[in-house]
Length: 577
Image (cartoon, rainbow, N blue to C red; front, side):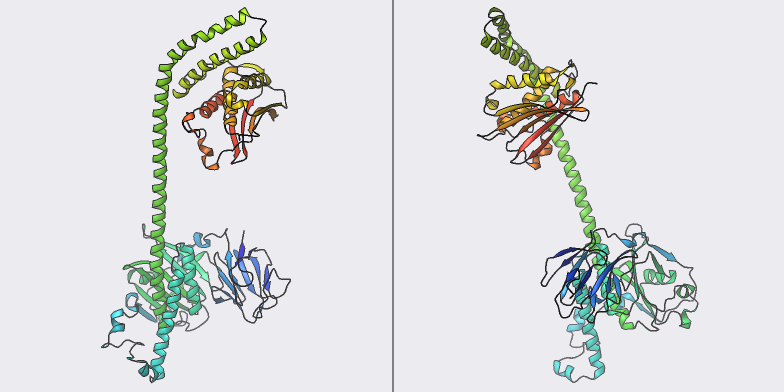
């Protein structure tokens, strides 16, 4: 979504969606009303077309400015442009903006011989005076040869012109350097550079081509007109490229079409370049790109002073480009290191889990025999049931004891199977039966659980559904889920709902509680073996084993939880045809 953000003034901080026909002015019917005497009733309006968003000056008296460049009728906008209307500054955000020049290409014309330029200067010789030269009392530097303010006041107009010219250069370069400072996005950095060029030079279009550091290939990155519109083709003469890249020469032509010394260059005539100026971008003695500006109307749009200024601007931009590239490389290196670190961390965690599983497996195998021997006497409870068939209480308690006996044996086997990656996990019998039978039996068994007893457990059978399942294994899952819910409940008012219902062609069992919930940052870890929030009271295997059992039943299990507001565990199983 394109939007405008007011940066100062009465409506500072306001964010408005940019739509077709959006208007800004002093009239109250405008989309953005600015009660400023410097603002016309309908100062500007916005349109979309020709490749992007445009701001249109509606004939205002005081003008509208984009990055302090006055809008001449209309100007194309780019992401992060700053629009100034009267005393109000407004930032433009175009989130769908992409590098429009990404598809641009260099269009070479046939090289012609005998091409000469009006002015040719070694780009390295056009640097500003050194600190030593400026501080020396013995040397005279153009525009800086006055020993005192008194001498400056008595200077002839020609000398003052030198001083003012250098002061202007300094101001331009200072603001450009500040604008480039901290820019790490290459497209925005070059856009800032061209904005400053258009502010100080009579250029109709500017082109920038960079040298790919690894391959040495020329890559066009920007071809922009004064009104902000962009072209998909960067047009340069092969001869100009050769001079700038190989000889590091900055060149200028005061009239590319009428200068007889350029008459032999068909490329200059072909592209209608009235005045051109091209300089190399040099950083650390390396040419990293080329900057070209063109004026299509003026016979002598550029002077040698402009060539000097553009060369220094290109050098400043070259340093910023190198910094941006270095920042991008560092960013990519950090991302790769982070990725490698995460991969190493996952590998270490997997090794630790594997070692824990192996240890628990050995422990389970070693204890299984002893546990079975110790549980042997519990099997004699069935004799009590046979001798006292009329004692209902004894029958109920004896059934619970026998069920616990069987569950302990099943649990030991389950842990052993889980820690051996489920080698024997599929060796169980599934039969078709109602799910009501499973849920009623499980809740009846949980009546004697210490944690579950203090909660209000309610069974809701919305749909009577049958499916194929193992009673023992599915009961293990439901017991684990209900006990987890019970342990998460508050001291008072705890509630657990076990719900059975049909959802499309699936049977869904939900265990819903109003407990403290699961924090979002650990939600992805709850299925991980040995991850537990119960401290020393839990091994962290319950949900992992439950998930394995449900998947063996061709089902799925999921969790939805809001920290502090409760949890819903959902089991989805296929219905019997």
